[in-house]
Amino acid sequence: MSGDPFTFEGRWGDHWISRRYRGLFVVPPSDGLEWQLSGRNQAPFSAPLQLTFRLNGIVLATYELAPGPFSFCLPCPPLPAYSTAEVLLEADQSWQPLEGHDERHLACLLDVLRLADKNAIGFFGDYPTWESALADSDGYGAPVILARISHEEVAKGLVSWHNWFI
Image 1 (cartoon, rainbow, N blue to C red):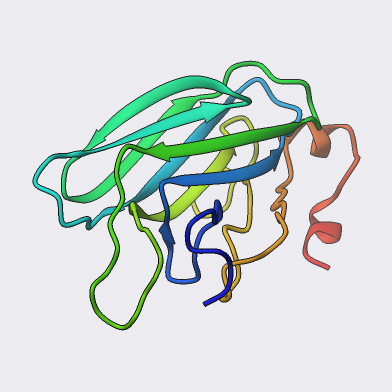
Image 2 (image 1 turned 30 degrees about the vertical axis):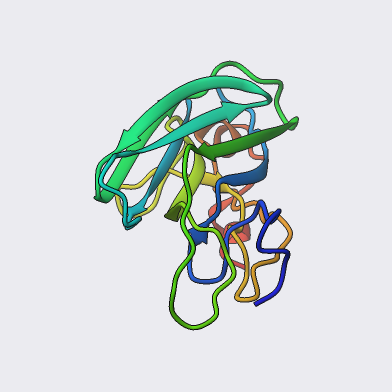
């Protein structure tokens, strides 16, 4: 395990996040963006877990997570293209596993957090996403941008299908 278990704001290699998760995203040029997040609430609490979604310091939503899987889509307010957006997820409670000398304070499992562009060409019925690499196996990792081809880029000849698959 790496990272300070008390102040870590990333995603651990096993998908757990602590009370605060911070991620940076590059905003693609589009007016059809939405935030998609999914995960699992496996905390041993009787009360639901409250998870607050902040974008650049502004609260966009607070979710009450019952035990089990969760999935949400949240419209993204207009942001300047190619700017950096900071997402902060804050849970109202955390817990510490009793087994295995695990010192982490855990809130929930975060499987997907991405900024999706509904106006771009997708593959297999999905639409493209720009997402942060939620972390590599040791809990650290620089954000990675997954860019897919938009209709506008193809129409303008900025990219071709051939170049995409090289």
